[in-house]
Length: 206
Length: 259
Ligand SMILES: [Zn+2]
Ligand SMILES: [Zn+2]
Image 1: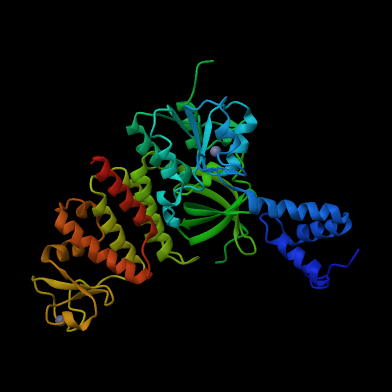
Image 2: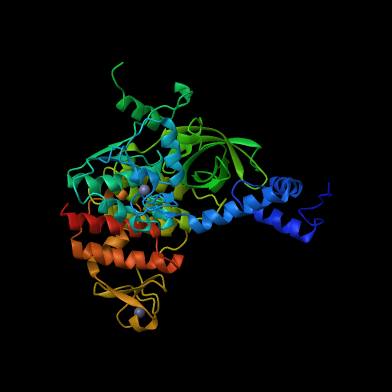
């Protein structure tokens, strides 16, 4: 194996360039970047080619669904086109990745809407920077009866949920939010008072 | 005295930014160390024991250890989570305005206990006061005071003559008031009424229980807002971003016909 000295100084130029590209990715440090690069040097050319093509394909073919704003290669996306899903419930999420998390539960059969961010007043990110007008446009006919606000349970996520609630409630649509409670596996004694307070508020019959 | 390797401090969490997969860097305002930044490991995981305790807009008690660049949070416990603010969008936005101002005016590791006291007292007052604008102006003037930007409200900035009870002029670039004769000596000035000057002097004295008894009509309230915010904007060389969202909420409320 080629020796790795400081950073990627001793590596050949194309190798150094690939390490640098990997290093730009989130969660990839210089060591992981080098490991990925040297892994690719060992795989057959067909493997490397298929990776490169997959990267190009996501950039060329992925667009935002004009209905739910999720990433898709077909507009509308598979979820929005699926007539077996409950068209009357829309679950509002911060990011496309959150859809995967909800889908994994297998519990939700309605539709989604992706905001692509949260209201963050101190960063200067306001309602107009999110896909909120696209959400309101979906509420113009009587199809949608319930909106589930599923933003993250933190200050900005909750501010965003409160903002949406103020906009949507007057339209006569039911607005709900995810039950906020204790994480599975968490100890009661370590719960902060906000979480614990909301878990008590959201208690139910057993 | 150098801080020991591990120490305990109270803090108000001003803000956070994501770091790596599950960590965050939190910005804290503390009573004895001023503003510091610390890494809170694993707090973005749902099961984190620390997560809810170090959210922005909480007053907490923390165990910190000194790291190479940033402190590391080893334990955290909420003292006050300001639920009555968090459960109300308007109040949340107002609290973020106070927090952003504190963050913008302070530098790291400069102790300023009065600023800590001002922020925490104002957050406690926020969900109780009938007139938030009054609290905002008080907060701004007191923050300026503690940061060394006390506006000159008693004598003319230029000729040093004590200000007469007539319409004078507020100058953001000069950091105070000019008499009518000297108003031309600064490039940008705004007329300041006798009442507005009196209110600013009273607020400058720093006793909120006295200042809170003031009743401002909307014209006077707007005049004070323009003068003081103008000075804040001049010093920061930018707008306070949270103010934009507050304005938006006001506009939305007016459109929806809600008071
Ligand atoms: Zn879709
Ligand atoms: Zn003068």
